[in-house]
Length: 380
View 1: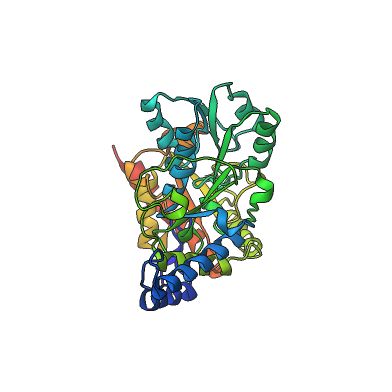
View 2: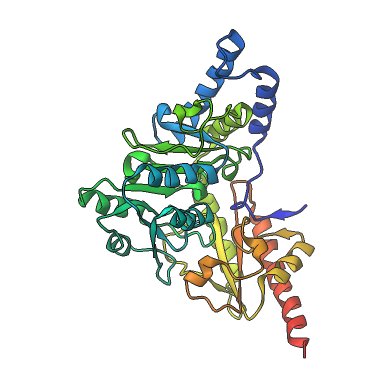
C-alpha cells in the first residue's frame, strides 16, 4: 500500500464525507435560491453545512461565506478588503501562500504599494516587524496562521492586538487554510477581520472553501452575479461540496493533533538521526503545526529524491503543490536564506497516518538520498 505523506496538499476524504456528498447530489439537487419546496430543502442543507463550518472556528453561521476554494476565500478576504478601502498600501509576510502573495503583487498594477515582511531564520515573522511595516496609508495586513511549507505558526493574535492599538481601520486577513482541523482556531480570540479555510485540507471535498468575515467589515466582491453569499460571492453554491465540508468540519477533532504531533516527532527523530545527510528547515523547538515536517537535503535537488521515494511507495512533496512544478527552490526557502543548492522536502501527516508508515517512510528517505547522492557524485 502507498504511504501518503502529502496531506498538506490534500487529504483523503472521510467515508462519512463521501456518503454525505453522494446523498446530497441525489436528494437535494435543487438550487438553494429557488422558492419552491425542493429549493427550500436545499437551502436547509446549505444552512446546516454553514452552521457546522462556523462551529469549527467558533463563529456565527451568518458570518461564514462559502467560496469555491481556499484560494478564492483568501482572494475575497484580502483583495476584497483592499479594493473596498480608500488606502493604497499593503503589508504581507514574505512567506504567504501564493493565494495571498501573488494577489498582493497583482494589486500593484491597481495603484497599491506593497511591503513584504521577511521572517527570521526560525520561519516566523515577528509582530514587531509587521507593525513596523504599517504606514498611515495601510489598507490591509495579511499574515498566515500556519505556513504551508515549513509548518511554522505565526503570531497572528499578537499582530492583531498591535494593529488594534494603532486605532486605525486596518483590515487584518489571516490564511488559516493549513490549520487542517488539527489546531484550534477561534475567531473570537485571533483578532482577525477575515479568516480563510478550505475543506480538502481536513478530509473534506475539493472545490469548496469558506471565509469568515467579522461583522461590520466591508469587502468588494471579486465579481458580480446573482447576489449569493451576502452578495459577496455570486454563483449557485456547490451544495454537495458544502455539505461535505460541513460533515468534515463536524468530524474534525483538535485532539487528533496530539497524536499526529507524536508521529511527526517520531518521523523527525528517525530522519534527523546522527549522521543523517538531512537537516530541519526550521528549529524543531519552535511552535509548529503538528502535521508538517520540513526537511532540507544540502547539495541535492529535491525532485529526484521525491521520485526515488515514490519508487519505494512513499508520496511526499517539495512544498506547496501549486508551485512545485516550477522546478526551482521555493520562495519560502529563499526567504529563510537557504542556499539554492539545497533541496527541500515536505512530509505532511494526517489523522489517518500510522506509526508503521512513519517508520517505513524514514527508512525509505535514507535509502532514496543514498541512491540520488550516488548518481550525483558519479557525474563528471
